[in-house]
Length: 465
Image (cartoon, rainbow, N blue to C red; front, side, top):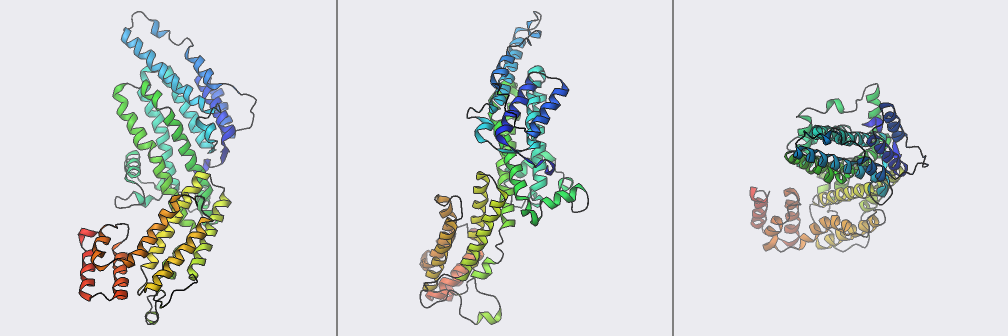
């Protein structure tokens, strides 16, 4: 998949793809199809041919392909079924070609940047649609071939950019839907052959694309995943026509393809983007910078948030983390990622930042009421900095991520009688973070050792895990 990650601008690409789909619908010979595929890959800006592709396909529907159906010896029901299937396949062809008309639908509406291999894939889909119309009795088999073409692309995309250890049943790095889809498509086989190698040859070149010097292949990942998502959207537009062309007994396969395989594309995007966001954003130091040190010499010192008076200055880690996030934004700008991918990457980055802050506050051994106020000040200063960096600063998405941190800070003021209930209704925090909170609160408000032990024991029980 890495060999086709050279982007093609979607404006001319969509028109060229539509012409290639139309060419396949009109039944050109093999040499002409190769030329059409080459035009798709190059996406040259020859906009002289502004054909109305939908009209061409619609006109082709009326061409004389019904000679076989005029046979008087053919059963009338069979003749009618074949005509309906042919018309449905032709409608799907017209829908695919209409994507390049610039009428607010399909590729022209999204104006994407696509990989050359994705445009070849669209050309393959057009060929399968043409075969469905020409070979009506074989529509189910042809549909399976079209599905296999997309499924192979999905598997290879995960093989190139996904985390293979995420396929383990106990891993939470991918959704169950994506895991089950990949396992089904590969029949449980490994992805070793699809992983870029670290040695010499083409494999090492692919590995260098994913290296830190190339921002872990950020640009390549985004273009590849957005191309796959674009193709998935195009296939969704063809679903109705395919459903009409297929026999009723094949409807279950159709629904599985769209309900599992096509739907898994969004899961794959989230998986890959969350992974690369974690690689680009170094947060390994955050929890230690926020919390108290575990060194014996530092344990004798006053904790960072065990203050006796409220400070008007924020902590140093806030500036360091703001700098880290600024660098993260600069990396995304260098890669020139799409607007949709930019939002997703920032979303994952801020979510990881919030989790890192909670982990850091959970490392605070002692905390006073004044220290808790300082925590809130630090979070608010960082939130103001992130608002100037994230592309969704005015939305509720940013506040929802920081709410994870603010809720943990405010839990410090929870009465002793309500603390057990609080731990039950907040599964988003780990047992270790809840125990740390109880230690902080009990130390600040002088809870009895018995109450503290009972709460910690309850948190460690299976009922609250």
